Image (tube, rainbow, N blue to C red):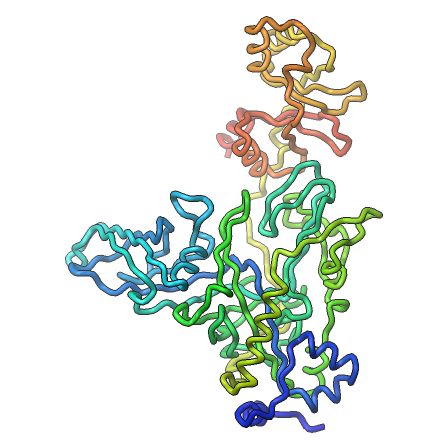
Length: 498
C-alpha cells in the first residue's frame, strides 16, 4: 500500500470521511486486523494525558501603567513571577509558591486566570527616568492582559519512573506520598494513551505539530528539557493561549510536604501515514514497561526494584519480593481518555487539521546529569565514631552522670543485640531530674528516632535536622546498629573547612 500524505488525510477530515480512533481503540483495531489494514483504514489516532507537569508556566503582558513602571519584582496573589524580561512582561512558573500560603502557587494562579477570577498584582521597582513609578498595586482578570501565552518547557513524558520505598519512614515526593516498607507504589502517565508512547520515533510529532493543550489548540515547540529518548524518557515543549483554555484541563495542585505543581491536559494527534506508524500507535499497556525505583534512597542513581508494565500498574496491585503491594496513579486516566475523545471529536467535526512538522525532534540521545566540580560530602565524612550507647534498663541518675562526665548531649538507646530502639538527650534528662524521676530511661526517651546512614548526603542530613527541629542524628548500618553520630556542630565544622 502506498503511504498516505497529510494532504490526503486533511481532505478526508474536511469532507467528513476520515476514520479517527483513540489510541485505546487503535490498540484493539491492530490486535484484531493487523497494522497493514489499520494503515489503510485509519487516518488519525488521538492520544491524551493528564498529570502533574511541574515544568510549566505562562508569559504574561500587563500593559503599561501611568506613570510607567519597570517591574523588577511582581507578585500575583502573593506568588512571584520572573520579571527580568522587559518592563511589563513576566513569566509565572507553575511551581512558584505563594509567600503567604504554602498550599497555593503559580499553578493555582494560572488556573484562577483561566477561570476568569480577579488576581491581585503587586509590583516594585527602583525607578528610572523612563519608568519613574516605584510601586504598583492593582487587580486584574485575564481579559485585562494583552498576552497570556502558556509556554511549558517539559510536558508529556514518554513514561515516568514508578516510586516505592524500602525504608522505615514515609517520604514525600513529586509522585505523592510513598509509604514505608513497600506500603505502596506510585506511578504516573497514561500508558496506552500517552502521546509519545504512540510515536516513540517522533515520525509525526515535531516542531509545529498542532495539539490539544489545556482544552485549547496548542503547538509543539520542540523537544522538551531533559529529553532522553534513548531511555524512553522523551519530552515535549509546548505552547498555547490561556485565554482559550478550560480549567477542566489545567489545575493547580499542592503535594503534601513536597510543593506546588500544575496538572496539564495534553492530546497529540498521530496521522497514520504508513504501516510502521500504525504498528507503533497500536501499542498496548502490556507492552509499555517502566521501572520501579527505591525513592527511600535519596541519590540520583537510586536502585531499580523491578520492571513493570502499565497493565500491571493499572491492575491495582503488583508483586514485590512476594509481597502484594497496592499501586496508585498520580495522573488521571479518566481525564486522559476525555482528552483523546474530545480531540477525536474536534477532528471528526473538521475543526482540527493535521500538519507536517516544520522540524524533527531527536529520536535518539540522552540527558546529561549536572556537571559538579566538587564532590558532595557524605555523612561518613563528618560523623563522629566516638559514641556512647545505653540500654533500656539504665536509670536516669546514671544517665545524668554519663552526660556530665562524657560531655554527651545525645545518647542512643539500644536493645541487647545493639539495635537502635530510642534516643535520649540532655534536655530529656534535665526535665526528668527536675520532675524527680529516678526510674529507667523508657519514660524519657524518644522512640521514633530520626536517623542517617553513612552513605547519605550531608545535605539530606541537614534537611532532616531542619525539618524535625533536632540537632543530631544517630548513624546506623543496614542492621539498625548504631555506628556513629552526626550533629549540627559536625556540620558547622564542615562548612568552615569548605
